[in-house]
Image (cartoon, rainbow, N blue to C red; front, side, top):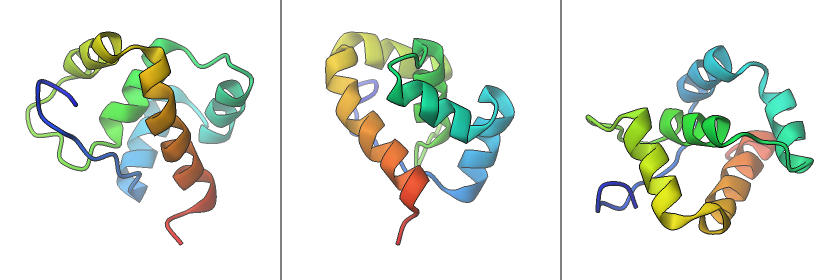
Length: 90
């Protein structure tokens, strides 16, 4: 949920390229996440880039939603998103 609206995360090729341009190599990001070293800013940026329909949402709104829901609640969609990135859409 962001700004009171349900959102879908979809790691399209273009979204992942944009995320990689901002965050660096995705393999390194996945490794940091696996080691528990993923920064809040990295998680927020990855979520923002992978929103299926970003509309007018900003990075800041995504970050605010993460803080409202808490890191524990955001761990589940993060794991699912990272799994999709690693395994592909099948």
